[in-house]
Image (cartoon, rainbow, N blue to C red; front, side, top):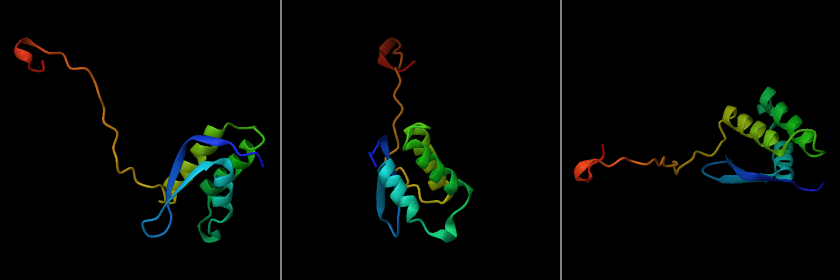
Length: 100
């Protein structure tokens, strides 16, 4: 299978404090194939289907990645973002250099 990379990896929590990054369709396929049968549900099946359809190009790689993220959120295995993104915006300065 010719591997297709995601624009950014999906970080998953696997085990006690261990992190696994899924960066491509091949890695997504391997991860889903090895996922425990007792925890497979509708979002798991959606992720598998999206992966299978993205390999030949019937859906975009981003759609497959999004399906993986939705499954990971529902399964509570999405790695928590420990570094929150800071919002930056311009501040108008008034007289005396204080923010207006």
